[in-house]
Image 1: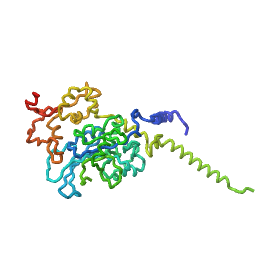
Image 2: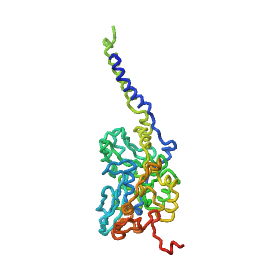
Image 3: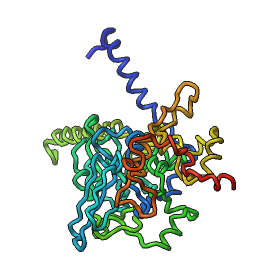
Image 4: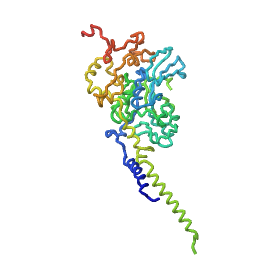
Length: 243
Length: 159
């Protein structure tokens, strides 16, 4: 192929775009954040959750979550007497607007906020065929939207139902534990706004984090421990009926 | 007499294989991002890209730097533990440019009810009301000061 003037004019902008991509290199990261110094998780205190849905609204706004999808949501459990294997669970619009209508049928009622458990043995990252989702060195499970094919393997692999396919981008999405906030020294949006302190970000590698004292002195549980996912969202005061 | 009479065929085959291997290595180097494999079987730069997203919620420390008067009022009541943006919503834009971006006025009849509407699933010690009976649709801030919600009796105020 001869390089004619016409062809050169077409090729040069393309080369310029390619070169810009090469030069882009590492995007600007948080300078003071050292990944290996952290091991992130969260503490959920069910005895404090009032089901106001402030966390859900904050998450939606902070992360631009599409309508009808949730990176965190609040469930209301109703357990009638001894039927702990058959709890009645509701979460209208993810509990986003709070629970304004009383439905006291007797029995046991409580709220359970949920989000990605940032498992250390995460089933979702193991099934990704292209390396688009991964466990970071700081214990946060993330998705590389540029690599994700939208094959949905990870969505069906997550035992907690924490992932969804973003209808705008056709890529898998879930809680990032507000990675853009915690790397800047802020807490997550949901923990920031929780009015009762029912959810608290926890750095398990930081010996000064109050999580250690809490874990020593309380009976805590993770969701679906029988699945050995290494979940790092700890629930205090959780009933056996919670799935 | 040559031992192998058709060596040329082998040389050509070898050349094709060498070209294929070189092409594979060159293409692979060009196509796989440099940061792939930096921390594991994924693109290392993805972490910095996710971390570079702008923040929407400024955090209560940012609010408290300017609104010290509200901090003082909040200290006197139970709402001291409630972060500003729990009610006022994301205010990072307001914090960046307080002059032109103003938070909207809240409708207390809606905002307060999200937390304080009675529900049997709420912890027993948490203050709850059936708003229909308690105020009948009147906005909560008609009586309560949201930053310090308790209504003191006259004797309490004198103390």
